[in-house]
Length: 463
Image (cartoon, rainbow, N blue to C red; front, side, top):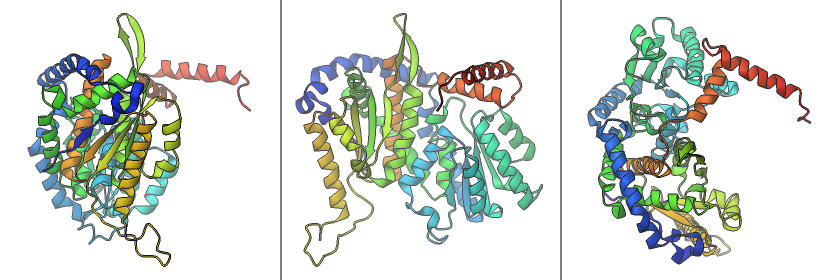
């Protein structure tokens, strides 16, 4: 099977002048990259980087696949109740690998697999509207929270559980629930044990935004007919490619490009797929990059704030909304194109009475021409860009892509001298929310935010 490929030529000074890097710059980073590689490997060996173990959990994947095959025909709808890392990977895999209008297909067209809903929010209108379209008697809910205490997840779960109780009764609601959470602790684990609810374990050493190849992302994928073993196979192949020879390690080279250009002022990383099915990979990557790398750290006894800003775009859609900025705006961006060699459809533009120049061409030719034109236009204006090319969009290539980007995140974190796997900024917002919602033990936070809001009332900064 063919491998994905990273082309970074348009990041080199040979093509973008002073805004790029040269071979000497790249090679000068190899010692730091080798050190980052070794540190990551050491952490893996100590069991600290669980995401690197996931591609090899083939028995777990088979259990999930077998379970899904037995259960999926019983339900019309599969609904993921999670947020952030417990939802974005599910969406990315589904969008990439299944029909773009999956939920509108007939049951026969979906081969008796359920529709998929992932309401990744607590917006009251969203959740109320979800209940308008689900037949609860034919719906299974996958409740996902590693801690088992995530406020947004539990709030939505309590609402949906209450609706289930009314529809299917006290003795049957449990059959409509699958729980993915920690093996031993948390509210959801206690509930699964108490009620005999089917559950899957999220490994303790796998963080949410790195969990797409764990039960977090695999269960919904398997229910929707995706070959999850092939996803892991692709990830294993990428892991094998990302070896100690930095010059042949695509994740390490991607890291080097991003790191060097960050310190040349390119602090925005735009991910731009030229393939509709990859649009939500950009969304997933946005969380991975932002939450992992946006950190306050201490370097040489000085507090430093670091972190490239990830932006998502879509070709060709955003040629008509964002590319003007990328070509003539500030020199503060690097573009990461996601490209594919072979689309899963070929659509011919028919003849016209006017003998238009487009006739007899295909949409495939048009989108590839626009992609190449955008790449050349950026390069001619000295805007660095690189391209990750997939031979096609399949479980095998998506597994490679997801794992490569996760590994690059781990590497670049070592270069930035930060902890990629925590999120203290997010935690601050969480504890303040707990205070506002009256959670026991967070009285101090409640008082703090009330005092802040009272002070704000005294100002005149509103019109």
